[in-house]
Each structure stands twice: as structure tokens, then as C-alpha cells.
Image (cartoon, rainbow, N blue to C red; front, side, top):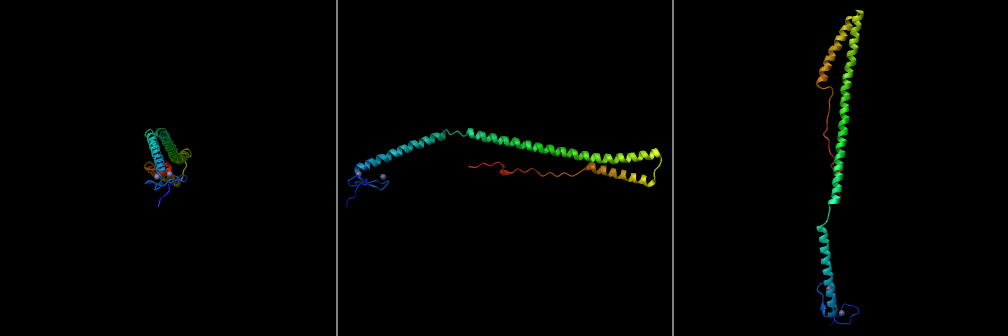
Length: 169
Ligand SMILES: [Zn+2]
Ligand SMILES: [Zn+2]
């Protein structure tokens, strides 16, 4: 039993089977089929070489340099934020110290004024004198505390959110 060539318009019998695609072909169409395959493979080879050549000279430097620039800017902005925060806390510390000084100053001024009045009028009660003595003693105790540590301070180390800069493919 003979098999026809796979080409619809061809009346010839098949003389060969292409091992690549298992088609029955007459000799003429077999060579045509072969030429087509060979030319496709050659074209493919050229295309692969073209892609390879382009890859050899692929220049990522421009886009990477922009990313690097953005990273650097982000670092500068972060430092600026830390500096601003440090500045604010430094001012807060100054204010707290000043408040402490002012508070004690007010108390001392009151006591001095009262003592001056005693001297001017040459009049004072023993319990008033004792009260001022006690307050002066307390003040000295307060100064001891202030000299050691006027208030407490807690510093939590700054944590960096690892997800704040992300690369996505
Ligand atoms: Zn074939
Ligand atoms: Zn044929």
C-alpha cells in the first residue's frame, strides 16, 4: 500500500518520512521541506547571535545610577530626620534643666525675702524661723538629688524598618 505525499495539491507518492515531524513526503516536497527547515534554523542562529551580542553590550549603568542616586538621597533625608529629632530632644533637655533651676530660684528668693523682712522688722516667731530652717535643709537635700540626676532619661536604640527600601523584580 502506497502513501501519498502530505502536500494536498501533490499527487505523488510519498518517498520519504521526515524524521523531525514524521511527515510523508514526495522527494520534491521533501527537499523543499528540508530547505525550509534549514533556512529557519539558520535564521534562528542569527537571531540568537544578535540577542547574545546585545546582551554583551547591555548597559545597566544608567538605570542603576539613578537607583543609587535615590538611595543616597534617602540616606541624606534620614540623617536630616535624625538631626532634627536630636535637636528637638536637646532643646527639651535645656528646657527641663532651666525649669529645675527656675523652680529652686523661686523658692530661694521667697526665703531670702522673708529673712530680709525679719531683719527689717526685727520681728519673727520661733516657729517661722524653724520652718525656714527646715525648708533650707530640704533645699540642700534637693540640690544633692539634682546634682546627681535631676530627672531620668531613657533611650531606646533607633530601629530601622527593613522594609522601608525594597527592590522588586
Ligand atoms: Zn519535517
Ligand atoms: Zn509532494
